[in-house]
Image (cartoon, rainbow, N blue to C red; front, side, top):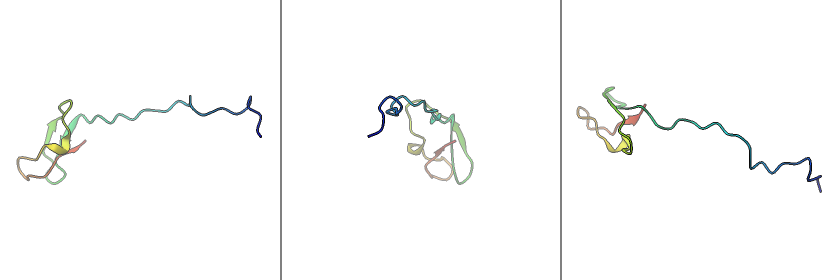
Length: 57
């Protein structure tokens, strides 16, 4: 059994948080772009030109 004083549990390791909040929603087909609205998923908005769901930038 390893010595408990030299082994950490790994619970307090610092992790970098990735910013998963895109600043804009973009059409993957034509490039149409609108500003991201807080609380609204980009995939729930359809491009007015292509009718394709937008993606986060």
